[in-house]
Picture (cartoon, rainbow, N blue to C red):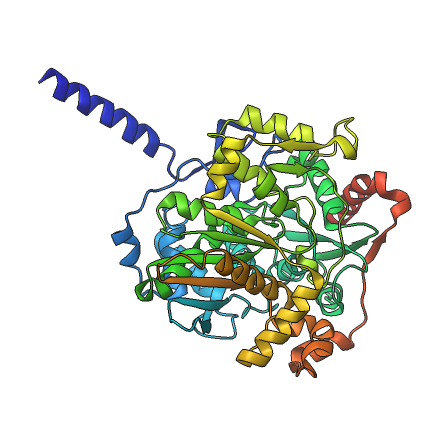
Length: 512
């Protein structure tokens, strides 16, 4: 009886002490302080400069997950998000209405479309493209950001608070963020983009809006430079609190939660036809990568995540060598949304694989000078994880770097062989999946690989047309291209003052 009683007490303590963390969120720099979802989603970065993650991750059985196989993307989104958002914050009926509103602006009823691309001669390995780009700005960012727009409107209506939203973009995030926030009450948005380093359409989508609550800023630098500016403002706790600063880059936990749905949906669409499912993910800031890793922790039986990168190969070096350099030079490529040399979401992954040791993560981020606050030179700002951690990560992550020529050749090959158009970012995912398949060709299991298609080929018609010929653009895109751009320019000569200048812009806008 005594041992039975002791077992019961231990079980109760472990189970319920863990459950106390359900619906709460914490910083990667410290787990001492926790926030509700309502608080966390309106922060972006945590007060200590860290990034937000759930304090608790549910452990789902394979049978429970497969019960969801017939759900629509919208229905599945509710099932996943309700695991992290309590009824006290958003009642279930309200959450369902928010999701219905989120996806009402998508071009197809199913929201996300699965396209079977090809299978090998023995029909053992099938490759699918999951089209995530049917939202209003033709990029996967619409999935998370349309939800955030509806979410913020819902929360601010209740509280009457105001938000000043800061966004650094390497291409697609900016336009998707503007689309979800423009003309909404109690919100202003400030978008920083790398001038001259994105496609014409990406720039026009951001710089042709006439909404009073939108400010667009072109910087003489990279999206990594813009991230440093934003981190500086968030670390100014007094200013951040006074002006209600918030980020809706993938730093925002709402984005990560919505990205969880991508992987559950991918698995559930194909698992019945194969033994194993892997996903190939074009990667830049690595928010999608962190989301994928969390789904693995939740019990989703994915075999591998293929980390597909362009010539900015920091992630490939991290997963193969265990080294991450703080500020390598950014290379301009024909896949500009992935032209990120510092994958800032790696902080979240480091936190998870270091057993949530916030103090250790703080040390690592200081060594990398991620916040731009240390005396460390850019040449010396790097970290290296242990061989043990590299081996641990390699069991799930497989990384590949794809060159400019390989991107173009893959676009052409997919079009000629399969009569299907993929944009440069998706092309990287296709090529990486082929490299993965070639390396695992001795594997005897039936495997399905799902490539996340992150943007429509129409967004990059200027790159596509020399490869595949004339691209027929929609009337909406043609109309945007005809408009004149209008944005503020931050000169390289004032780089050290960019944070101060942005503060002044925010203060002026709020005073109006």
